[in-house]
Amino acid sequence: MPYPRGIIRMLLRLPLSLYRLGLGDVINAAHLLVLTTRGNKTGLPRHTALEYRQHGRKIYVVSVWGERPGWYRNLRADPLVTLQQGRRQFSARAYPVDNAGEALAVLHLFRRKAPVVYDMMLARISDRDDIAPARRTLPDIASQFTIVRLVETPDASELPGLPADLAWIAPSGLVLGAALAVMLTLARSKRPSHD
Image (cartoon, rainbow, N blue to C red):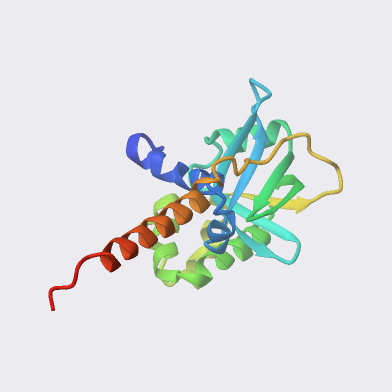
């Protein structure tokens, strides 16, 4: 699968902007979290929005581009990360999934919500043209995916989560919209009647 560039890359970063607007709970409802890793070259916090699935206390993410993404290389260098699920922020430790049975279970977790969409995506990521029927094909290709298990830890990560520093925009827009509605209503009520 080609690595994202241009407009695709901007679209993939859109959930981070929505988190910054204070809409983390809305984004979390779509099973997107913010993963904060330490840059393996700079040491600076790096934020990435990723689709996830949760099974008990374990959170799973799948890298569509294998071991190539920076977030994956970063967590391999330093597995202590910060996660944000809506307003909830916590430290976690990242573990690459190397057990075929666990990988298979994770792939089934992802495709459960939208099997047709995930069957196409999983086929594109794997070496198969088609993975239908998935129940028979997934065991053969589960080891081809780069999957990470994230487990909450009491070890405090020094990595700051993504701040909702633009959260003032939405309430300001609501206040401005309400003020405009009141002004329009007052302007209409002051018009002379032509009866």
